[in-house]
Image (tube, rainbow, N blue to C red; front, side, top):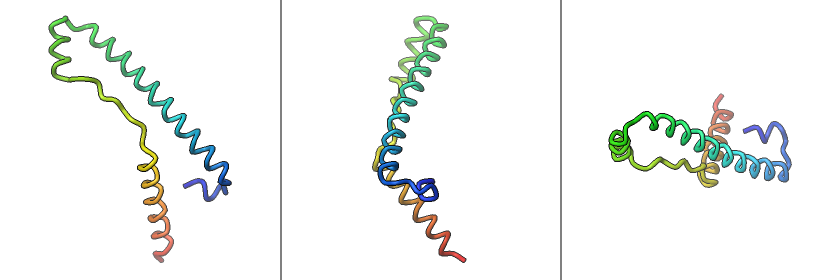
Length: 90
């Protein structure tokens, strides 16, 4: 984790975590929009029957959800444990 070597203050860590969450949501929104545009372009080349069959086979588009805070915390704890284990091993 970069926070330790960079000596982030608690305020910096909180601000950066908040900004990272905000930027991740923005990235997900942009990615979803681009994917929808590309899908629409490709599906425009299908006949109405082909499109109906495609939609019945594929189903509704998958919605990507940002990683939860709990999952992020778990990843950070796992990384910390791995670092300490590596330091303890000669």
